[in-house]
Image (cartoon, rainbow, N blue to C red; front, top):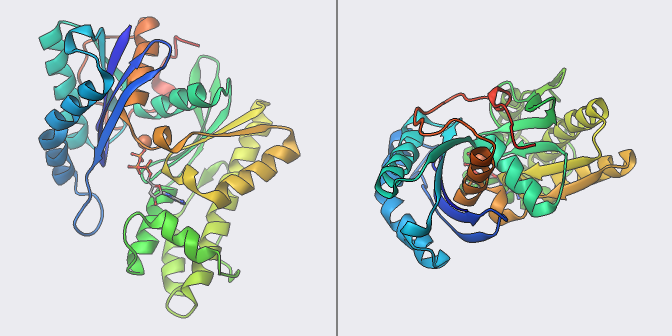
Length: 322
Ligand code: ATP
Ligand code: FE2
């Protein structure tokens, strides 16, 4: 079985071709970069529709697979920006009709977890999914991926990017903040964990305020220490509550060395194992959608439904493949 998966939830338009052993035959993506400010949904959608043909051709060339060899098409059905999701759905539907092959919509967050598990050999982890648009602590319990904790406002990556932008640093902000933080010291910032949920918008406002009268290095250091400690606290409680022995770190912010360090200390203390998804598969990409498509198809998920689901929650998905 060979599946072609399409990712288009936000910045990235990506296509991956994957077989049923999760061998990645090709994984091509192109990222929309706003000229200034944050993501503009219509511009991102235009980017996706303009680039879709080129990305498809490149993916096919790299994979060595002919269109007629493809058995299944999958696409990111949600959650995400509706304008962007629609492009993926239309490309998916067109291919499915042309090739007369089934089409399956997959949940973007679950795709991150499943490719992460496969590429790290984690079997049943508590997952921390941290990116520009998402901050969630997820674990499989009683047939579904349950959300144990999440942000109440903006995502951690968005908090880092907005802070960086306010200081005139270019997108993406995470790596720049990480570099500056290496020479910073602690100056204190509010710490906001509410039960199992997190909030970053107040911290962002305070960090911008503090940057007016403090060294930028010190604010970057304090911002990282605060936000990553909050994430580590929530993941630790989820591990304790679920009694799981693995933690899987994924999403763009998984590239942060400091976040990995904090999580690895916590895991060591609890006798748990930390897995970090390789960079190629931790950001948004089409191959994770293709792999999740194979899992969903093999477990008899609903097919040929192209209605996008902007706010699709992970725990709404009945996971038939575990
Ligand atoms: P999603 O649609 O899943 O929310 P995304 O469009 O935000 O994903 P990703 O590539 O998953 O894209 O994540 C990008 C985020 O990762 C940005 O916010 C960026 O600042 C952050 N990031 C990248 N490298 C680092 C780093 N070294 N430290 C901290 N954050 C990082
Ligand atoms: Fe993502």
